[in-house]
Image (cartoon, rainbow over all chains, first blue to last red):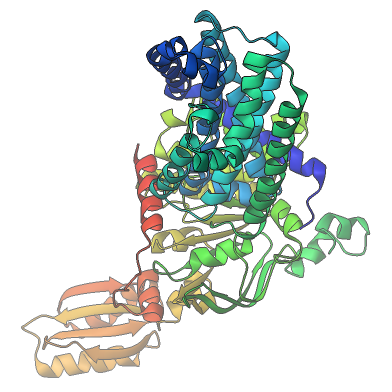
Length: 265
Length: 362
């Protein structure tokens, strides 16, 4: 079937509209999305704040205030978690019959994951603004100011979209939420701990540094940390941006293929 | 393929002529679906459904009813064979097929987190209706299904029957030419079931819609279908009107017992006289009962008074008379056999069924 651009975008818009409506009505989901990063910032931030008193640690972290180091890490992690669960909605839609409803309507199939990814990105933007506000209240100041915040949002959106795409692609072949949760857990923990989200690269053994350097999360964290602590270092920003963009294109192509050809109904 | 409107606008045929031609709204040609793993769910099924008809697919669980619907609604690709909806090939013209059909799945596919109105609004969006058109149609289907008063409420506060009605309303929003209803009354109580039947009949009468439904309730098929196809193990066993199917079993059965006081000679005379009546096709003794017999008559209800008149004339007493008009159950059992099916249970299917039941019962 020929997928025309406007039909695709229109279909995706309605899927997006539905997801947002659902999100707004799920109070606990909103609460958790806000509460979890607060725990990270307040608890981890306090626990590790002593680190900057150690000159070696301070050198590795590259900041005076541990929270400045930590905030981009928490933002990246929250974006990852925001995205990685999006596949669950496909499984529920299938179980509740809504997937069939969308598939028998004339919208292109690719509209479905696309709309869901838009909704995830929108949700991530809201969540990030809240995290930044909390960090600000805790005394975190980004050296690049509001301009830096906007660019950080772009990075978070790109990362969330990659993770959402992976999750949606996996969900096309999986029928139960339990299985998808297992796959998600299997993916996310190693991804976080092999990235620079929580610990500086310099503190890692060499083999882990190599993995961390190619970890997609690092591509988001590094430029965000640069924006938070150092300034507008363009090579860092552009490298991260283009790598995440490339990843997005690859993942979306896979998602497209999975939904048009391989969707389990 | 041109639409009916285009055909009429060319002025070559009047609407009546077109209808007399019995326009085929659904057509399948030797449809086969083999699932990975070798399970043949649909086996060379060919049939046609005509405009304005309510056509029912009747069969035991796992007979291939839903698979056929899923092929016709473009959810599944057939392994072999062809299928057309309003003249469009489900393999090649999917977009047109989707524009022409409404699908109400077995699973309740309304979104509980949205209001009734929002569900319909969303559905209208999927069909790319303009803003004004959407407003109009949402109102129209809410009126038709009697949900106007509750339009703003979240669906999670709806009863099972209301959810089903909303689901049907959503399937109607783009005024499809053919409406597919997969087990439309599964799990509903009898009042709600009758209510849904009356909506289905109204759709045909008011909108001239062609309706294809699956069911395993005999009563449902009998009450609302113009024609019925009985399907079992993927094969289409027969297609006809409910009345013809019942007739095909030979006629109505009159069971009767002579009183104990009736002599052997009177009994034989009575049986002979009854056998001579044109409306009695056959008389046979019943097993395990010396005085019990069964007569096959062409129209039991009309024939019964005459039956009594014959006995009255001979002054022969009967103790007990039972008239059994063959039901669709009998037809169904005749075509599908009565043994229990070994169904391979699918975990996800069971889960879906459980969710549907829970939502319908709430």
